Length: 224
Ligand code: SAH
Image (tube, rainbow, N blue to C red; front, side, top):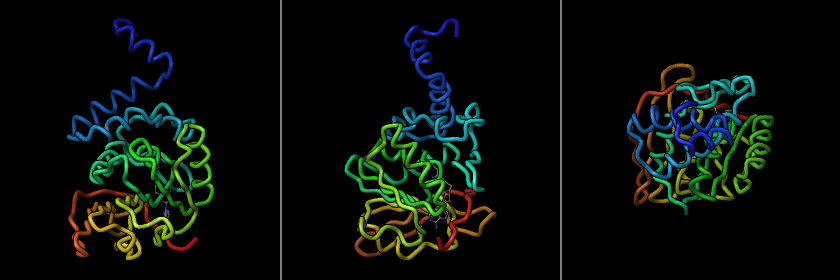
């Protein structure tokens, strides 16, 4: 800590992980080309270490996904940043997330817009994420325990949809619940193999898909 400017020293005392978080944003996110200011500000502010299991806190800002229990994972920070940037959100966007998991991605979205809806199929994960996000001041996020394949009809259509589990194909209800001009980002492919992160754009009633990069996500399950 010696030699640090006083202001950074004070910040570090208030939140012992703030320097790790700043380092994560600089070396993993900015360095790899993410430029959206809203996305960078969100990654700078969400306390990722409070959304992973307590024993993994020291690794929370590492360049890797981490286990969060129930066989699920919190995505690598860069993947969260990349997927969020692809959605081109603004403070008025209404966004649906499928796969709440730890709640980290939902918190990142909630730093950008007040209109975040998140669906999780495993009740324990959904309830725990809701509790934690409330305690961190993200009380405006709406949660639901259900099969996200069906989206969240009552609150649609959405400006943006982010799916954080890999689907074998793009769920038709999600395409229907995307606004015209809306964007969806979703990993598509076989479970446990390399999948393609796809961008789905709806324009004038036409749906266009584009392959963005290879990724590995846990599978999108079916049923509740
Ligand atoms: N966005 C999460 C990443 C979670 S991993 C985060 O920031 O931590 C993927 C999550 O999708 C898991 O929690 C898994 O239980 C959930 N999931 C899998 N199939 C689902 C489905 N059909 N509907 C909703 N959630 C699902």
